[in-house]
Every structure is written in C-alpha cells, then in structure tokens.
Image (cartoon, rainbow, N blue to C red; front, side, top):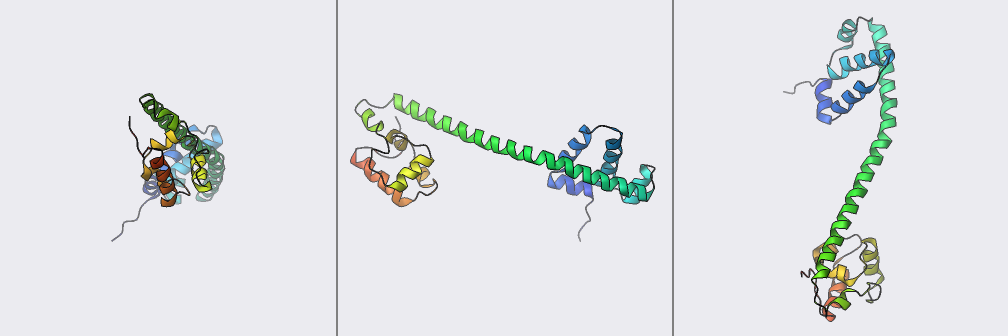
Length: 188
C-alpha cells in the first residue's frame, strides 16, 4: 500500500524545500507577495487549487492565473541562480584541489628536511631528465610532479590511480627508482 505524498513532502525529500523557501523569503513587492502566497499554498502547504483560492480570497480562475505567473517568475529566478550555483560549485572544487596540492607540497617539504645528504641530489632530479617514457611524463605533468623527490614520497598505489597511468608506468618508475637506490613511499 503506497501513501500519496503531498508537494511539501516531495520538496523536502528532493532537497528543494529549503531553496524554494529561501527564494520566497527574499522576494519583495506587492506582486511578489501574491506570487509567494500562491506558491506557498500549493508547493509548501500542499493545498489544492480550490483550497488555495479560498485561503487567498481569490476566484479559482484568478488564482490559477496568479499561480501560473508565479511559477513562470520562479523559473526565471531559478534560471538566474543556477549558473551562479554551478560557478560556486566549480570554485569550491578548484579550492579543494588547491588545498590538496598545498598539503602534498607541505609533506614533500617536511620530508625533504629530513633527507640524508647523500640522497638529496637524487631527489632533485627532474622527471624530464630521468629518461621516462612520454606516458609517464604525461602523468607526472598532469599531476604536477616535477622531481624524483616528489615521486618517492608517494605510494605506488596512489600513482597507479592517476589518469592515463597503469601498472606499466608504475613499473617503469619503480625500475628507475630501484636503479638509483630509492623506493616508493620513502618516509624520513
């Protein structure tokens, strides 16, 4: 047996209830006041058109027209908000990436301070000077890995997860590291 959900329940479940309520609370003016009341009656309270028209003391025909206009205006308002919301979401994602890179750099710098003197020259070798294939260089470039020191502080499993990277690329790096006396995930 299924129970019929009213508009208010559906809006709450889809997460649009708070957004709609916020939009209705910031719009001003006599026209918007009527629009807001119409939207609240139908979308939030879950009233029928007849109930809503009685509550707002309008004829059913007039209420229907007001509600249609209110929905058009709400769509217009939402279409103006959506690109801004998407831009903020993209900015937050970029910010998160930047913070992760800063954390990674801090780890490298902290690890670098405790590196034995005989290993420091090996850590300073550029990935471009190491003789890696184009695929490994492409992965390093995409992930902003510039030196062997940055490679040895990460885990092999993390390297393999990078875009366009696989076991062969990780094997290639591992062979190089082994040849110069280094390994993955070096901790100092």
